[in-house]
Image (cartoon, rainbow, N blue to C red; front, side, top):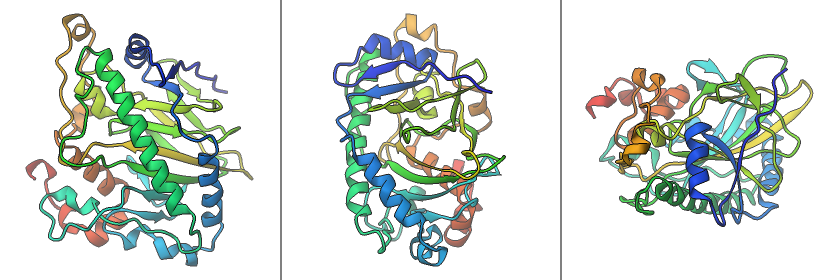
Length: 328
């Protein structure tokens, strides 16, 4: 049986930047309070999600992701992969509402476009778009605090080429005796914000002491560093491995992970750290040596979608599957 991770807490209303720097250098996971997200909003989204996931598959096909060249919509149970292994969940993926770029100028332009909204759950669109906006604001405030904690200007992570391109997943994990809800991994983006369902279990983190449970904390989001921020600080900030186990048989868990990504054309800056901090930066993790991040944010997002959703990639983007992204 795993133990519970004793994660620290940061209050976004008045963050202690020295403590924030220490936590994300040593641990990479923490609880965030004082975000301004209305207390009942995640519960409302989960309630709407239950309505959608309770529909027969024939009805959910209206918004199936294979209909969307932009990787938006419903992913059938067991069709998303983490490092080649099947994840035991079904989910909805949403991003900012956008216009189709036709013809695309850059490879990542295929990710921009409209969401697919289920007609049977009309209240979902308003709640999801509002939640995306709120968590993007939280992310930018948090990134400003990180920048200041590292001796940088507070606006060093501000978007340059347009608006951020976050991703919100609404995931349903049915109970199972074995298998992975999501396999062990580090997030590829900048920062992840997660609202855990009260009373839920399954999220585990490895901070050097084996797999430990991350428990829900009322009024708090769970925050973890992505690999892009690890690379930006030459490994000083730590992207921590984590996984999701399926819930007990006969139960269901709903999860709302939000992934902040800068505008697709932006490059995450490489920060020049003060000598005392640079001396503690070990370089990016060894896993990144085998699959290095691209300088441009959009290529990282594209690589992840192509790998995680092969059914969408094969239907809409066969030419990108065959391409060398390094040469694009």
